[in-house]
Image 1 (cartoon, rainbow, N blue to C red):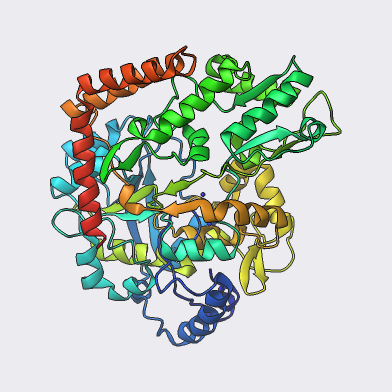
Image 2: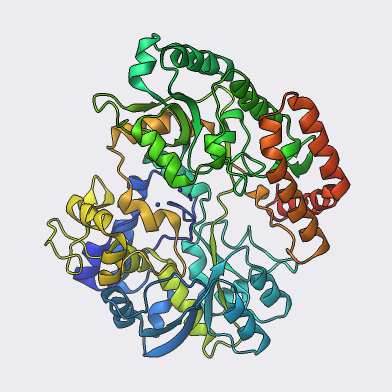
Length: 560
């Protein structure tokens, strides 16, 4: 499966306190403000302001008012979370804030531990969980959480100056209050900074790839439409009949994975997201004409002998092996996997094609995780002030960036890890190499990049952005304009155990059963019509009505 400004550490070392700016994120880059300044400009101006502020203590962040020792209990609701607040990063934070985190996690990702805590009224001070978890709504509805509005207004009003506008505006409950601190948000400020640093498009962007040697053989024709692409495949297939003309990689069309948006493949046709706005109403993506267009494209390839059943039955490993051996002519995957060298000719490679003219990707940018403060918290004031620190630029330096300096020592604990380059904090190349070589191992040693209590996507990942990477700059130039952000499309599915949840699951099962039938049908229109008829009989329109209600509520809450 498959989206990170600042600098003052130098001054921190000299003066002891730090800066402000921050926000919470969901993939790299956002904070408050107008979002019109470039990352480097904002960092430079923030640096000067923060340096003066830290020396006088007038930066306004209230967490500094009390750094006496205190224990805060914290549940990370993911069994796979590997750290335990016993590493150099944790010690650095505790030394600075006085907060010692008593961290716990479940043994399985079944929500059982958290649900038992809710039922037994034994919740910890802080919890981080998936923002779409049903448990979050249960805690809100049962009055078990503090609203961030109340705690911020009472204890740290200046925290608002470092939060991106989306944090306290886009996640309000029906009572108008915000009970969750959503992280990894790709808001307006993140989007601006990401564009300026060639980070809007990452290595997970869906693409088509084709073998360069075979493409050269037919004169590299225009393949910007489904029809032209199919014609090119047919020409190559005629020259190399033993090859699979088109392959959908990474299990995109395995029956168990088959989704209404056709996973990454669908964006080539402007289809992405399992819910689409059709005729002014939110409907399941399978009703979008673009879904049928994409299915017909695959059906056409099949009828021309350009699509086999391999990608529909092969495991991800087997599929990857076929591509790497050179058994395929072209495949659908992502940028990071799009330039492989085929095993049967090391003198060529697969190249990433220009997108279809219909290519369009809609992202919500609404984040991944939510951190909450429970009513069981023994000291809610220290909890909110701790999150203020974690959300600040200084917090991100301590928790995500590490130690500043110009020469990497070779020790991933001692660092340094980053330095300033043209006004932007940037990882030292040697540290980046060490981190990428053993991500989990390095994290277990130094603790950096793992404690995402209140992470701002931009601040968290800005050190990883490399504006000088010409290849990614080119990809951003091509694909960036084809990306659109619509946070109002962040619509949660109904509870799986509810009547609507059961209808939705039956509809998904029907899609999985019908997908291969439609793609390999003699008459794809009849097969699709039959599928839609069965879908209607299941009552899918009721689920779509619920989605549409949520969509309208999102629009109202976001002032759209």
